Length: 398
Image (cartoon, rainbow, N blue to C red; front, side, top):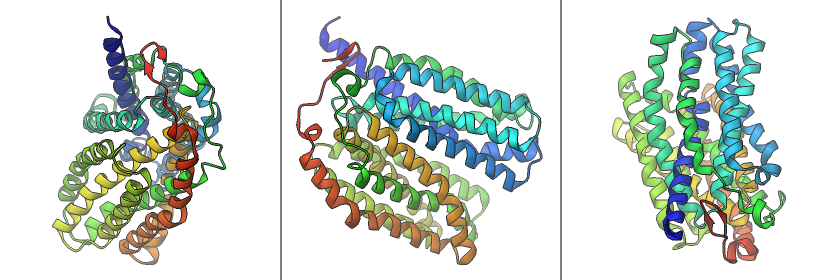
């Protein structure tokens, strides 16, 4: 097989592996409504207890990525992905067979979250060293959106097969089906491991991390109460479900736009557009007064969320090809998402969902003037952003 063919095969394998790994990792949050229902119906936990278990799981995903980020470039993504999938699968099986003891289930959920974090670390670190990381992330996240919708549609079947809390057996089976896809990471070292990690330090990366966290906090809080906004409009449950589930596909537009503008528009300009657009969309979501506005807000939410997400990943990879900064940023993003829901709940209790929209808009908007100028200077001064990027093939780094 010729070198170009080998390179193409390696790129396709990488995109597939990133897509599948992203899908598995995002089961941690996307499957949470099903898990909460299973904990309440199957184990007879209260809603508060079920929510606490979910917090431990999502928090552990964020913590594992943040703690593992300094060493993310030292391990081959294939091994990181396999170990993470194994941990997440085994922890879910143990939850299925464990007695209904809250501290025990919280512990097992924490272990599962840590496994999901390793899987997401593998995807972020492997794609960070690619020649065009923005496009790899865009393609990988587009594929993940489609796979995630398919997986979520299959999960309710687990309750019919394995009982009221059968989802905790359904998730391991889905992970097992996804396991062969990590072969796309085979023989792939991260750029930092191969050429010596020389990316930015944690302190230097603070502007990017602040943007990432503020945007995730704002959009996460709004999404957590998107269903409540629909209820305030007196929309029926099926209508709300249809709007929120189908709007996910709009994320494909966002990832496509991010790939299209990569290399054509300055990153800081594109990020400023995404941050302002995301904030405006949250305000539109929180203050929706009719079904058309509510549906438009849901669609635009996913467009801007995925647009900014891909750009942030690509910017992290540009500044640090080792994948450490991208891993840390993704961990901060998940942590901000985890704390946004309870704070959003306080806003709803004190006011209304409009308050959440205003708070989310402020969080997104203030990131632009506070952090983008510093990020622009970093991009201008960073050797990693101007030097020729290493080319990664299926057999290593050239």
